[in-house]
Length: 271
Image (cartoon, rainbow, N blue to C red; front, top):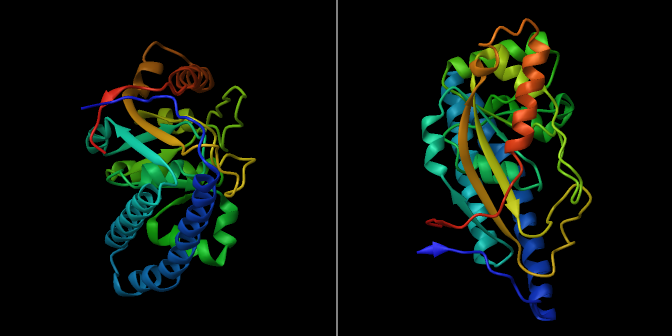
């Protein structure tokens, strides 16, 4: 059955109050669950599982299924709705870089909940966070450090069939402003000779944006669309004899900037 986006009417006062309360409950549960998993489960995995690769996989699986549960709760309590399109393509993307636009705080949650592996590049400063440090190490995430350290780590993950998730904007998009991408994703793809899988995320109204707080809920229930698109080969940007890696990175970034602009879609999709 076709899933078609239709305009939503204005919600009642009771509906908005319910969504504020339900949003607070879901994110409180998310925070408590994350703290408990970081303190007990991930710490136990690091102690019990001696094989680092197996520990990474178990940690990422734990994150994926906990995110699936969280998203199910947000839908069950009518906080938001969402659908994935073309999600099966990610099963073909071992050793690939996944890039996406970044309109909401939930973007990482959506993608990590459905990627077979999700190796992220995180801020170096998060390693100083007592709660995040253990998760980052257990999950095998990469700290955004100097390129001479970052690139070998990325290459190692890609060579072991990992999937690196990158938001090339570097931060969440400001609603109403043009998307500007940094060249980090293109440089990693070119230097590691990796393909890029494109993903666009669209929400019919702003929610959990860079400026918005969790309680600044939209007038009506927001609906997210996560669309897995085509794959780009980095080799296509170095095969024409460009002598400068910077030129190839600039061209690839321009392509990403064009293709990561999200558009509402109408598809046959199982929720």
